[in-house]
Image 1 (cartoon, rainbow, N blue to C red):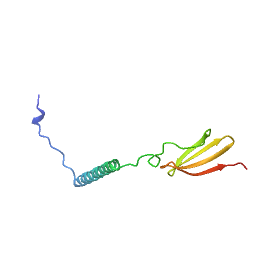
Image 2: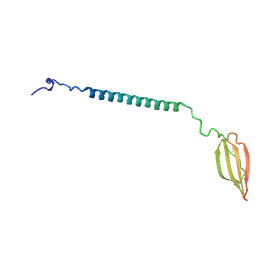
Image 3: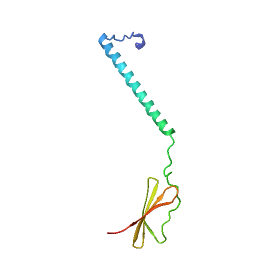
Image 4: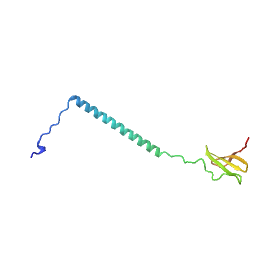
Length: 116
């Protein structure tokens, strides 16, 4: 039996055109991989940057504990926006809207709702 290591292995030589194509393919691969690595570094940097930024507290504009409406009043709706709390309530046949400051709880304005 013959030993395969005894045979002299010769690799075929490529033509100059084939060598040029292989070199272009290698360069293209290196450029593609370089762009991929740069993109991954950019995404990682963006994630680290976003994670290190301090985020504002949700609801930080609203620290009031209670709002005052007349006794016997039934709250129809309450909306918090722009640092204010708007409460619509019904007291008997009368419906009113009260606007409160979100930080101090102070009533800014009361608007009665009347029918035409």
